[in-house]
Image 1 (cartoon, rainbow, N blue to C red):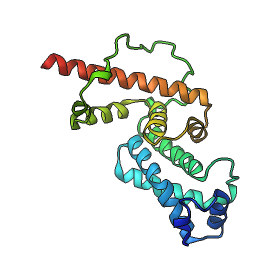
Image 2 (spheres, helix red, strand yellow; image 1 turned 120 degrees about the horizontal axis):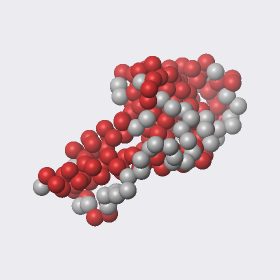
Image 3 (cartoon, one colour; image 1 turned 60 degrees about the vertical axis):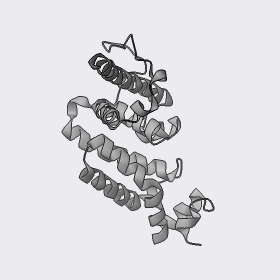
Image 4 (cartoon, rainbow, N blue to C red; image 1 turned 90 degrees about the vertical axis):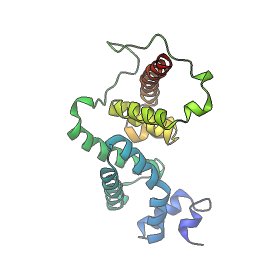
Length: 204
């Protein structure tokens, strides 16, 4: 059975890595198939450009295949690839938006950041309203407005469904920092959407 198909359940991470190190082309294809979508989606949501996301995807696999000998298997192979992609995207983002990048976000909510006192209750929104294209657009815009460190945590944890531990490994931070940043991201998104719903209701 081809390795790309066996990756779905029969091939262990160690066997997959061995195949990659032997230069098995099917193992390369399996790596792209298994991890490529997440790399592309996160890069696109971080950078806002399909061309740059494609570049990050290509650069990630190029760097990974050049440095396979340095991968010790302490994390999942996909997690290692995501970390490479994150670092590449972050470097580009620093050049584009230096004022929005902060790697040392506090672990607790403090300082001058305001936490919204009144948040719109989402429990009672009709399903069709939640699925409206306009709302999806507002949510996408709200996600793009987050600082890069918060945006990355939200995308990896909530959109791509990675575990807290994996996100911590990818970003090189603690699990407590991941949880704190995710909390901050959710608050900022809820505040943005709360304003949207309030304006919608006032306009009716």
